[in-house]
Amino acid sequence: MLHALYKKHHWLVRGAAFHQLHLLLDTHANRQPELVDLLAERAQSRSRAAGARGGERRLDGQGGRTRTRCTASS
Image (tube, rainbow, N blue to C red; front, side, top):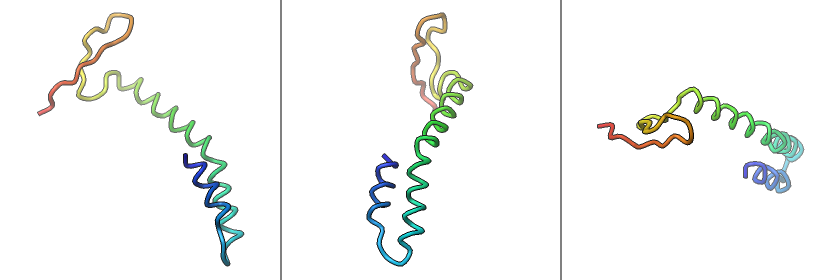
């Protein structure tokens, strides 16, 4: 989504700063796949480190899929 927006504005730039903005937006658009991959990897590593998410309690931790149930926090 961000890639498409950067590219859209990359082609719509006008005015005195056209060249600098054109290059800047192109650079940002081209970095989006790398940044999305980095963000996804970080999210995966954080979820593995945390185990069950906050506010949830494991109901069956024995093999197979782990079901969770939200608990009241107040």
